[in-house]
Image (cartoon, one colour):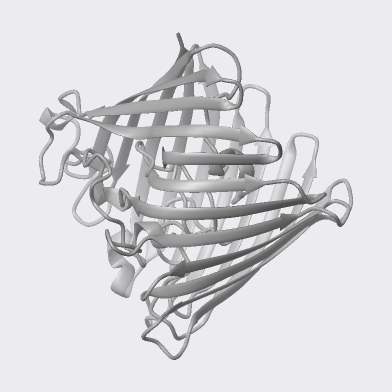
Length: 392
C-alpha cells in the first residue's frame, strides 16, 4: 500500500547508520511487469518488462561525528529478454541496449556538529519537489549539499544546494550514467536551491513549508500540514505553486486527505485539484516536468504517474490496507479527470506484500481504464517485486 509521506530527516540524510564500525549492507532485486494493453497479452514477451539489480552500501565512522558512505548498484537483465520480456525497467546505458551496467549511487560524507547535520556528496533526497523515486528498481540520486538544523525547539530547518540529479524517471531511466545526465531542473551552471522548515510545536501536528529556486529558470513553493485529530482519525492539507521565470501564471495545486487507522486496518480518502495554467507539473521536478514523474500529492496513483499533477487535473483517491498476518493487503482506487476531453483515467490497484523466506515479496494487479490521449495506459498490469536484503 503506497501512502505519500515525507520522511524528512531520514531521507534528506543517508539511509545507512551513522554509528559504530564499518557496515556493509545491500539488497538484490528482481522486478517484473506485464501489460495486456494494445495487442499484447498478459505474460507475453511483447507486453512484459523485467530487470535485476544488486545494490551494495558501505558506511564507516572515520571519527566522532564524521561518517563516510558509499554505494554502488549493478543492473542486469540476466537474459530475461531472450524469452520472457521485451523491455527493461531501466535503460541500460545512455543508448538503448541490455548490456550489464554498474554505477555509483551514493558517495557522501556526513558531519554532525551539535544540532546540525551536514551531508555532502551523492545522496538520496526526499523533499516535495526534489526527491528520489523508490518505485523503480533503481532510485534516482543527487549530487548535493544538505544542512539540517534542530536548534529551535520543535523545529527543523533544512537548506540544500542541489548540483545535479541523474534524471531517473519512468521506463526510460538512465540507470548507468553514473549521475552524469543532468535532470530537467538544472544544468552545470545552474544548480538548484531548496529551503525547508518543519515545525511540530502544535500537538499531534507536523507543518512544513518549502521554497525552491532554480536561478534564471523557476521558483516553487510547497506548504503542508498533517495532524492527528483523534487516535484513529488523521487529516492533511497541501498547497503547491511552481512557475517558470518566463511565465506570468504559476502552476498551482491543492490537496486534502482524511485517514483512518485502527488495529490491522488503515484507510484514506484524498482529493486534489491542479490549476489550468502553468507549464510545470506539480510532481518531481528533478525527473522531468511530467511524463512518468511521480507526485507527492496525496492523490498519487499506484502505477499511472504523471497525471495528478498535470494541468487542470482533478483527482479522487480512495485507499485501504489490511494486515491479515500472513500478508499486508492493499487497495487503491484513483480517478483522474484530465485536461483532455474523453481522456480521463481510472486505476484500481490490488497489492499483497509478505515475506517468503528471505525474500520481501510484493505482487500487484492494476486495472486501468483510459481512453483518448491516455489510451496507451488502458489495460491490465500484473507485477512482482522481489527483494532480498542482506548485511555483511
